[in-house]
Length: 223
Image (cartoon, rainbow, N blue to C red):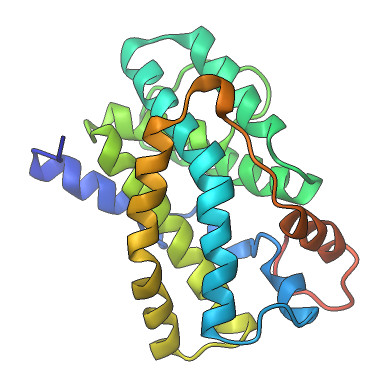
């Protein structure tokens, strides 16, 4: 199902914008160490790094949970919202990756409160996945478009990080985004077919990069 109203489309653009003050630009999600270690050296190696995350992290954790949280928000199922929120946080393999999720979730929840949007009572820390899904459901954005907006926001933030870190020129960064657009659709398709019991994933090199980023000599990003 596609977005059917102009207002929903505008809200999706707002929610997915890099200008949204949730701090996504402050997190490299392991990329800073990967560049420092020489794992990422150009556009193509960066594309491979991000492609693996789409297939084995976002496609197996973030997106299937985003779909379920969107549906739970629409139906007012607070038990499912709390369960999937805890599952999203449990799937973060390092303290830095968990911080990325919770810091952005807290920032988005605070922003939505300032916009007078009611949010469900989530126990403990709030995953960005959960708050993003609740906002999209409240604004009438359908679940497929919600997932595409989430993926686009993640990809833009990662391309911006790569521009600073690899470094990539502006043209190469746009080429990177173009290269990965087909992977976004494949990621969504795979996520929609995943059963509850199969949610979860592991990327050992990403986890290692995230851990080692904490003690890196010089850093531009929080994690």
